Figure 1 (tube, helix red, strand yellow):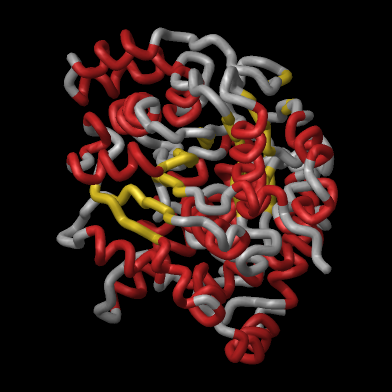
Figure 2: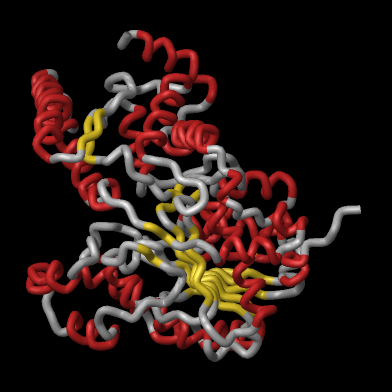
Amino acid sequence: MKNPSNIAEFYQDKSIFITGSTGFMGKVLVEKLLRSCPGIDRVYLLLRPSKGKDIACRLEELINNEVFQSLQQDQPDVFKKLVPVSGDISLTALGLSTADQEILNSSVSIVFHTAARINFDDNLRQAIDANIKGPQKVITFCSQLKKLQAFVHVSTVFNNLDKGEIDEVVYPASMDPQKLMEFVDCMDNELLASITKQLVGKCPNVYAFTKAIENKIPLAIVRPSIVTCSLQEPIPGWIDNLNGPSGFVVGVGKGLLRTAITNCQLVGDMIPVDISINLMIAAAWKSAIGGMHEAKVYNCVTGSHNPVTWGQFNQYGIAAWKRFPTKDMAWYPSINYHTHEIPFKIEKALFHYFPAYFFDFVARIIGKKPIMVSLYNKIHRASSCLNFYVVREWKFVSNNPIQLLEEMSVEDRRVFNFDVREINWESYVTNYILGCRRFLLKDNIQTLQIARRNLNRYY
């Protein structure tokens, strides 16, 4: 007889409140809770009406996402546990109706706050609204919940980057959050843009800066590094966005990205999304059974226990793209990495912009819309936001996740596994490429033979 899961038993008959459920991590969190904690009573999802869609429509869109495909086939009734509530983390009481507030106040035991802006090129006002004001309002509201046992806040490990070693502690804020918010509120966008760099200081972008300031959250704080595709669950290689390395992976696979700024000798700290989610679920369990007296910080990283360099990642990725090419490519998968600007700019002109201008010129002649120069402008704008991270390296202390694993039962370690030491990077990157091919490029397996023929033309 299978041993029961202590964590699943803890979630038995509990009601959960989740912000950010339509985001990349949020979707995987909802799917995992429904699948591995079948005794859950209700999962309340804070949804904001948008683009003419009410929350019922947004919930339907969420449920129809590919991430829930297995659940739809095996346990279609489980979605009845999902309850949408209309709100906005930027509003007082989260913009909830009085009736919804009363329901949440009397029933919710566990809160997962995953709503944050992860655009590395956000303006300061947007990031502060989402990453400082938002958590502040969520905490204020959740402090009133009568049954609250655990509050899990998802942050980022890329805080306090001026330190060589980033420990699992809550560092003092570099600026008082309240004063910062008041300061920003009284400025217009143009003036704010002109002084953003002075405000950000040593942090490389607005996202990391606001997270560092806002980092006064109680209970469990889970700090992932660069969140990438799933390792195993719900589908190996599942990805739904071009953030982080995914944009690079797709660009290389399509033969569009042929040169970039990266130090291949440095560790690229990436964490599979399902590893992060399993840690979050276990951290909530630990917070509840261990009391709610102080924040516990979990640096959810791979570099401390199972590092992979950017060079290794690239090697595995190129090999996988050659085995499983995409059917529409501009060139064969290959990329040159540089640590200095001059050779990078030369190759950028030769390999990116010269061909782009040529193809746009031809497009105009034959009456088609020129798109290549615009496409490369977007590619380089996006990649420049990540340059800071791929030419530097930090040491992230990550002892608390290992300690938590040791406190879990054998069954819990199986069901809610977040042991990064078990990741086989070559296998993982291969699934990453297959995931990008399937979920981002929409290339099904039937196109593989055509894609391989197309690839052979370039050799």
